[in-house]
Length: 454
View (cartoon, rainbow, N blue to C red):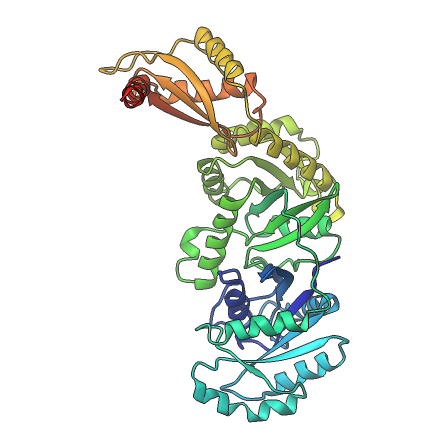
């Protein structure tokens, strides 16, 4: 049975995003005094005493969006209501009933489901006495809350579960993989998400910077649940420091990379690789994330005769930290090759979670050290590798026991990792290489033996 959906609706700036965050007990939606920050549907799964439902934040109804996206925002609201079993109609108790509140009430009266009137910003008990006129909206007694301070959060949570008593679904399966979709503005990330979701799950427009939140979109692939994370398009950091919305969008995007199992790095085929691309590539590499370079708008590439090998050489020079990343060429607006990107992501996830027997790993180490003996570093000497072990996955993490961890220079380190990719089933994912002194290992074993004898 599918999870029931609870849609949060209301006019702009009544605290819908704050309400989602307080019910989820974590920061999900961006909260800002600027009207119209939320445009897409932002959702999360809520668990309350063993019962689950999907909570959906929506944009402000009736917002006059400065990017002419009002119709898109209202379409997202209608899609959320079409799936909902319960609506939380949020109003501002301090301002009373406004004309837009009446319009939202009129919209909700046409719906076949239950509506719970939530009077937000009741920061003190005295404010609950200000809500008398809210009854004329036609949804009975409001539940007074303060999303900002958490006042009556538990009472609201209990009322939601009560009203969903006959519809609460099964425990949702854990997603097998989280995939972050990142890149510059207008690279086609949201178009790609919608293509795979089979609906306008996120707003697509020629206007740059439409997506602001990091939006989790669940899809089914081969009977398994995946989460695609649509992120805000990135631009030069200097342009975000004075814009709180841009700053939070950037923070959400980088956080999405950290929690992803695989990153889809979108690059516009019609543009040259920029400084923003280079910085993002560096960040992905630093986080040791499996990554696919997704070259979108391939149908619009200026040089129709360009071959894919040229792109591989181009990226290896400009994005050297992602030399391990495979490249996919797609046209997201037509859905061309989008499914193959998911198939490749699944393969990278498999590589990143593979565990190698110690014997096989040390055979590879033996081959590598025979192929190229590491050079000696001044005042440190030549590194000697005794043996290695895989100590973690996601990313595959190899611990080498050596005579001196400082003796291996960066060039040999890169050579060693690249050869591990050739010899082991990690050909397209990052490998984290750790060095530890063999003497430390010997000392620890000696101390442990002494304890055992004692």
